[in-house]
Image 1 (tube, rainbow, N blue to C red):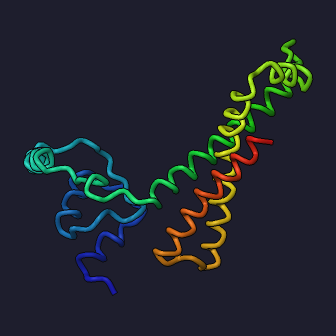
Image 2: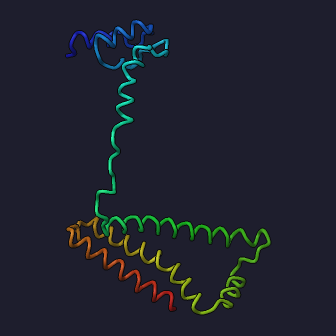
Image 3: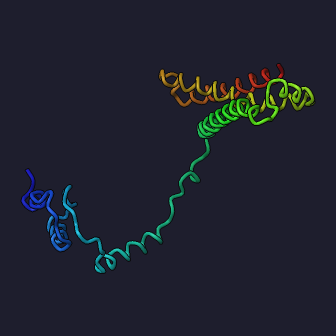
Length: 184
């Protein structure tokens, strides 16, 4: 099944080899050492360093790939990025509020429902609406974009036209629902 020169090192599986034996095995077969063969010395030969040096210099002179700078930004990029950001923001906000609400009274801070209500009552109406919008928009966007992704899982709206239509629908509905929640 294997060629004789490749099968030879396979016969030595489990045996300890010296560095010289391993080098000759590699030179003859030009394959990696089989599993189970240990090389006793790990020192590098100066010949190997000499042959690798020009390659390292060539790599330093290669141009970098332009990556994302050559592509035109698209709605799908921004919506995907914003979906991840809003998911993280909603999770951090939820956990911070829950931990703060649970731990603050134990350490003597007034972070209970009565304290929160009294602080919010002193805030001007415009600031309340703005704060509620800032809290509501990431939540509504993430929820509606999640529904959009669930629709994609059923292979609906998978054309370019469908992707953009649902994208603009999510942006519009998120704004309208966040404004409605902020005005409550």
